[in-house]
Image 1 (cartoon, helix red, strand yellow):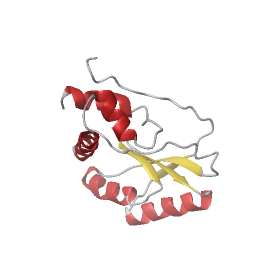
Image 2 (cartoon, one colour):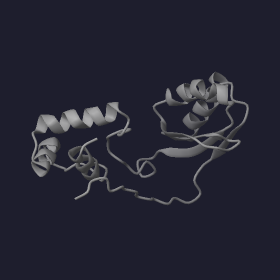
Image 3 (cartoon, one colour):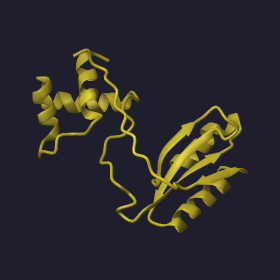
Length: 151
């Protein structure tokens, strides 16, 4: 990753410019071509530096429900169960932890019923014996950004 990639990540992790051509605006800021910005972002995503690019919405205000789930997965089944979990569009995060409950993921869906359908399906498809459902009682919004470039 070169310094331009680092600067591009510094800028985009806090959002894209709200203009008709956001990649052109980024290009002008970085003094490179628009197509190079697009190429670099695609390359960074393909290499795993960028997980996703998209809007962040307040799902509760939009009428959605959410929960955090924790499951115990045998080490030899982690990859398989991850694929099962990640097959649902409603899953927004999925992390492996060093704990008895070693896979944690969030579900955001239009209803509590849909969340329960997904949890039931994951238990069945992934042959998961133990799942904890942890809906939020209080929300905390933490914004993290990481300075990568030298400038």
